[in-house]
Image (cartoon, rainbow, N blue to C red):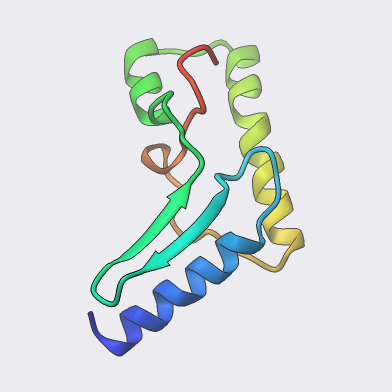
Length: 100
């Protein structure tokens, strides 16, 4: 990993460790064994928004609003913290469980 990549990763880890919002995946612990950096994060076993969109095929206006509301809330929180995600897409939006 190049120095620029390592600095970007360290910055991302620093930002993640400061996040405290119910709709932002939590970072619990970091382990660096010298070769590999391990991130212990909140388990999100519900899959990606992308898969839900493909499976569902269409949304009512109400369903779309209910789906996007927690995302907008998390984005607002990040922006209030001076953080911009830069890679928001359905593949990067995860559900905590399949019950949601």
